[in-house]
Length: 499
Image (cartoon, rainbow, N blue to C red; front, side, top):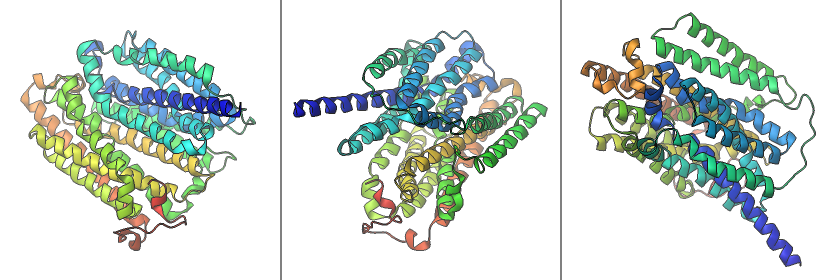
């Protein structure tokens, strides 16, 4: 009887694991398939440049600014009801997105769906840590991370296939059957756990609203400048208001009893610089996929499928070098690898800026180098940050890391897109997002190329600044620690987190 009970518990753990893995894959895929099909959506609805930018950035913007609140809600209200609500919201909004009748319906429903995605992000890893026994936890987290990596890898290609064959609406509808199955599955099999004690001050909703509205205002102001070619009254007001709200968010988080973002973490100078290095590298390395799938369609005239295939080297090399994190950590410290990864990515971005008008092979090699740098940097930087955490602060630090890096990525993507089209007349900027700029005057294509060189050059600057920040974050002795690393039990050993 005892053995039968153990087997039943083991099966329950497996069900929980695969439920989380599949739901994570769906959420990750939803953020990676649409980018390559944006020109198809723009042409279908005759959207302008501002609307196209929102279609691209709203999903990440919404999920980034709400994940902290929704993660805290999971702590207080219980993982199961939050997770089921997120899955349900994701599935229903995906269904409705396929029936969109105008571009603003697409934008608004993406906001709704992103709340569901953020709920999944905020609770998935926590469910695995809480529900899986320690002997299965490492495998579970490995499968969870692999689901994210595979979704990132196949997302652009899958989006291109769907857009080229059965149509852009199926980019949303493909999530519905699996999402509905996960909702039913989670209602029947996800374990029930008691919720936390809810106090009015425990969930910092005002702080969450300040972050959401503040960052949204900044991104919208940049997008308005991109669309109208100048910083007018509306964009300037949105920018000023956004920064004011973000300052108010920081002030609130420094005084509230239960903050969403614990600013006391940043009293450590080395930790703060390592976190800043991670943000700068995210600003540099997470944008080229979106930029290049649009570039290949608008400038080179490729179909969504071919454009998706052309950017594959970046996620492939990111995955390969991330998988080598354990081996690399035996040869060099996390601090040294952070610097190395930043410099490799800088070289790849410089090469990309210089090769935009060259052959596909050169561009793909440059993208691969950027991916290699990202794959070296991300696990190393994560190790450096989490090696400073106690058991009770690991989740807090990791959540802070992901939130700040996503904030940096959304902001840099908005700036890069604005710079890319800055040389084009305002009246034709929507042609870039519709991938029809190549049918106009060759002079417009050259102006777009110049804008792209500036935009990618800015990303290279961010990566190089990330390398300098990584150098400043650690003492020189750590940077010279090349060769076999002796394992240490103290918190300064950066290689003990990922192996």
